[in-house]
Amino acid sequence: MSEHGATLQTYNQELVKCLEQLKIRRNELQDVIHQEETDKSILERNLKTLQEKLSKLNSNLAQHQKLRDSYDQTIKDTELGFKKILESSQTLLNLALHEANKLGTVNNNANHHKTEG
Image 1 (cartoon, rainbow, N blue to C red):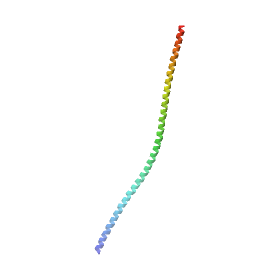
Image 2: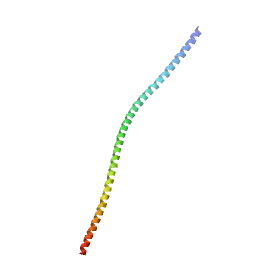
Image 3: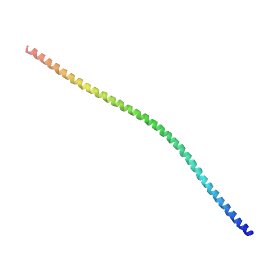
Image 4: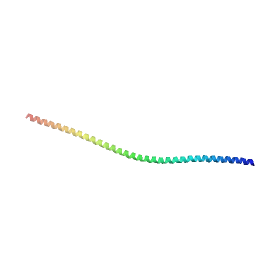
């Protein structure tokens, strides 16, 4: 019977050691889980902050693109108007030169008639 008692005692000691090792491993794993949960929480906060920044940036970008498009349209309209002014000025200059030449011819003819008479 004493032999059974010694064997039982050995099993009990081994079982206690095994349980202690399992608890140590479990506690180490719990520490890892706690650190991972902390890291996850930090990443989620950072992600939220980045998403808010991205949203604000997208909003600003859309406003700036709209403003740029307005500049483009204003520049296009102004250049078109300026081109029309240049064309009108050229037409007016040509007309003025033509009339001046015509008047010069009439004036020369009139002066020519005076000198002959």
